[in-house]
Structure formats: structure tokens, C-alpha cells
Amino acid sequence: MNNSVTVEGLNALLWTLTAVAIVLSIGRFTIRYVTAGRFHLDDASHLLSLLLLIGLAAAYTTGFPYSVRVAKIGRKEEKAPPLDDPFYHKYLQLRLVVTLLVFMVLWSVKATFLIFYRLLFDVSKTFIRMWWAAVALVFASFWVCIGSTLTLCGSVSDLYNFQKCSSAEKLHDIRPTYKYWCALNVGTDLIVLILPMYMIYGLQLRTSQKVVLIGIFSLGLLVAIVDILRTYESLVSGTFSGVALWSSLEVTIAVIVASLPLYRVLITRKGRRSLLSRLSMERYKNMDESAGGGTERKFLDTNRSSAGQGTVGTFRNDLETQDSAFSMDARRTDHVPLAHLSR
Image (cartoon, rainbow, N blue to C red; front, side, top):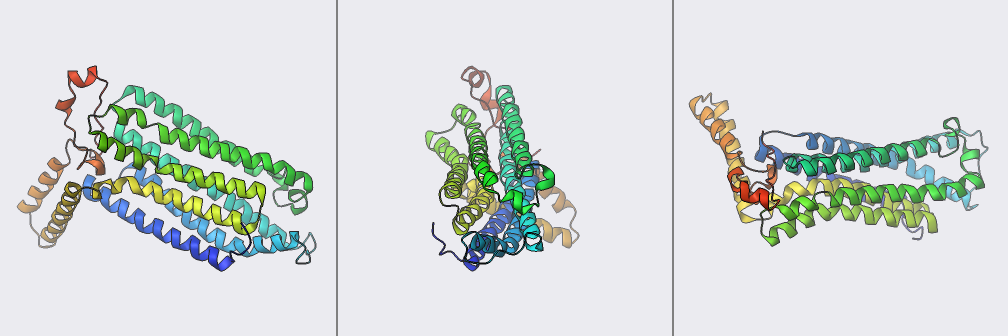
């Protein structure tokens, strides 16, 4: 990657993708509320990742000019200011904030998927055991990344010491750190990716439906691929524009991907009709409430509650599953029902 990407171009790309993530997240929250009548813990986790992304985008925008200047100093295109210049302290502060926020965004996205899987498949004891193992590994890997970030320049007290952080020895030592950051991120992405596959295989669904579900849950693979490309760029060329470009793509794509599973309801005609029906019901209910209606409102609440029974969150229109269909025959074939998200 050459240095043809400008700061203005990076900012435009970053904020455009952040805006896409915001719009898709609003759509996700809307679909969840309309179909389930309430929000769940995975919605809170997704909101956290979105807020962290917005904060990260602001930190990136502030830090880009500092990174450009440091790159020019490293290429001898600009005279280096004295080491006691406040510029270095500010640059290292922004670098630390950006690095920590990147990890927080990526791991909060993993948490969103893990919570979503738990809500869907919590009827299976085998899955719950696998889920807790995955949670433990993801949680531990997050703190390994945070701890290594805080000791990147040696001790924590040297975090803002530019001379120590930019020494040839430290620059050499940081390369293995980039590699195991990538290994931890990609490894936990694959764990989160593989986790629901066992349950999807056992669902009483058509093969085409299973393929669609696997495709939706496999979107996280995009984030892993981008992380590998970003790490490669850091190790091979290390140019500001290349690393910044792939970093911006990685965090925004992660939040976008976390928004998409709930859009499953829009893929089929039945799902779209059901969503539009629920939206119409919601509007009618609001009109009735503003008009002071009583009996009609109570009827609508009861109707909406009964419509949510035996369904699976925003997947209810395509994965409608009644408990009676998973009796003794289902247990013999290891087929398990999905857990209800509207409780």
C-alpha cells in the first residue's frame, strides 16, 4: 500500500462506514423491538460496540495528523522536534486510546454474537458448556491484548516516553506482539464463528435454510480476513496510510456485521409481511393510546403477546418452531428447539 491515501480520504471512508454502521444498527434495534416487543442483552452489547466505534472514529480523526507527522519524521521528510516537545506526548496518548478502543470494539462485537447465540440455543446443555468455554477464551484473550498494550513500551510508566517507545529495540520487539494480537483476534473470531454450527446442523430445517443461517453467522469471517491484511500491512510496509486504512475497515465492518443477523427477517416474503404487519399493529396501538382507547389497546397487547410465543426473536418468521414438534423423536435425533427471545 503506497501513501496515496490522504488524511481527508481516510476520514471520509471512516465516517462513511461509521454512518453505515449507525444506520444498520438503528435498523437492527427497530427489527428487534418490533418482532420481540423488547430489547435483550445482545442489543445492549451491540449499542456499546456502536458507541465505542463512534468514539474510536473521533480518536482516529484527531490522531491521523499526528501519525502523518510521525511518519514524515521517520522518513526524514520533516525535522524532528526536541523529545520534550508536547507533540510526542499527545501522539502517544492518542495511539494508546486508539489501540485500546480497537480491542474494545472488536471484543464487544464478539460478545454481541456470543450473547445472541446463548439466547437462541440455551435449551441445549451441551451447547451451554461449549458456550462457557468460548466465553472464557474470548474474555482471557481480551485482557491479554489490553495488558500487552499497556506494556508495549516496557513498563506502564514508559507509555508516553517517545524515546523508549520508538527505539530500534522496541520497534523490533513489537513485531511479535502484532502477530499474537492477530492470532488472538482471528482465533477468537473462528471460535465465535464455529460455535453455533453444531446447533444449526441439528435443527429441523431445510438444507437451504441451514445454508442461509451458516452464511449469516459466517459473516464474521470478513473481520478476521481484514485483521490478517492489516497485520500483514503493519509487518511488511508499515505505512501510515495502509495500516490506517485496514484498521478503519476492520472496526467498522465488525459493527456492521454484528447488525446483519437480525435482518434475516427481511430476506423472505413471509418475514417481510410479518414485520410490516407488526409495524402496522404498533402504529395502530400508538394511535389508540393517543385517542385514549382501552379495550382495543388491551386486545392488541394480548394479540401481540400471543404472536410472539413459540418463535425465535427476529428469526421467527423463517424458523418458527413449536415445542411439541421436538418431542421424543427430536431428542432421539439430537434435534433441539431454539430458545424463545420474546419472554
